[in-house]
Length: 215
Image 1 (cartoon, rainbow, N blue to C red):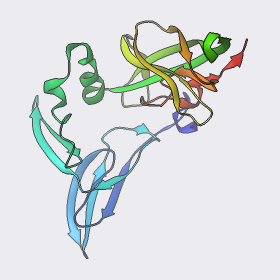
Image 2 (image 1 turned 90 degrees about the vertical axis):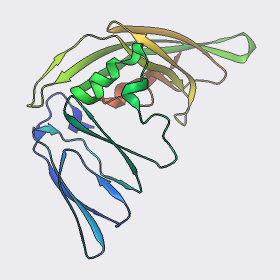
Image 3 (image 1 turned 180 degrees about the horizontal axis):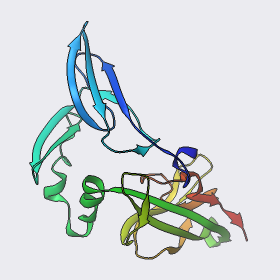
């Protein structure tokens, strides 16, 4: 994941994506043009500022929900059968309102790093896991610089098995950089840490977890 390292270069981005005529293609940036040619559908997008060299292209038979907020046009593309969370801004509970700001109004990055993870065998064939970690939250300016911002976010902490499946997963509010938690699991743990399933944009996601060592 070198493209998310602290010294990574930011890039200019522009793309034209072709897809089937009944699908919508998504790329980073702002849609400049859409057209159909030779039974293919095309989408041309550009970014107005430098961006991280970390992006994806998607294409599917999406339905599109259109709205406006503060004179900004918003389009939410979703699976036709999945509409329960389309009205995100209207239904987001108060304690999660910061997500609207993070997702729609600024560039938000995280640096989550597991430091230690140990386990001991306890009664009933269970394993007690103790974990320490550090977390930072950053805001990108869009022109290659970042600065730390206040951390009061709900994040997953968890313990994984050898296949990377959760043995324990709980969402906790992280209000400071130092994170500690204890978990009781039914199987021998393999790894543990913060945001273990990589739901957040992290510069070095590989260090979100560490190997759990036996005490």
